[in-house]
Image (cartoon, rainbow, N blue to C red; front, side, top):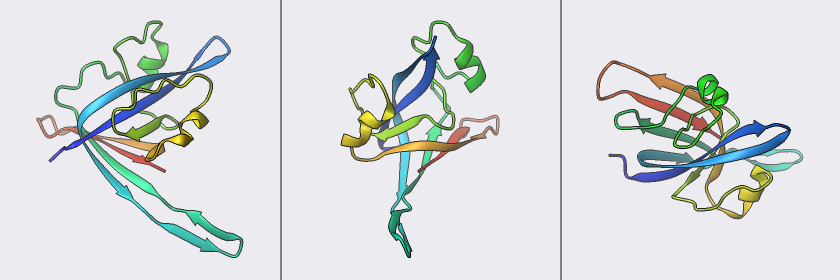
Length: 130
């Protein structure tokens, strides 16, 4: 039911330098939406994503504010708007900016994260991205 692997890139500031931390998540559902919008000025992409990440067994997750306050983010990750998500286990480390990921297929920016916490093994995060 959760056959996909994704790479999450969390953005943070180290002084005045923008940095990205990479985390690979296995056992998720990547449900891509392909589309286009036609306007007078031309065709623009309307691609989107619904990503389902089961909470069970997810070690290292921290809520965005807690994650942002960590001085050592090793082994920790979060889900927040503005971060990047890519289909597959990418070994690429971002050096300067997320534009470096343009060479890869299926890379989107997280727009929203909904926590579906029912108090059971069915708890999950529903991530939307464009």
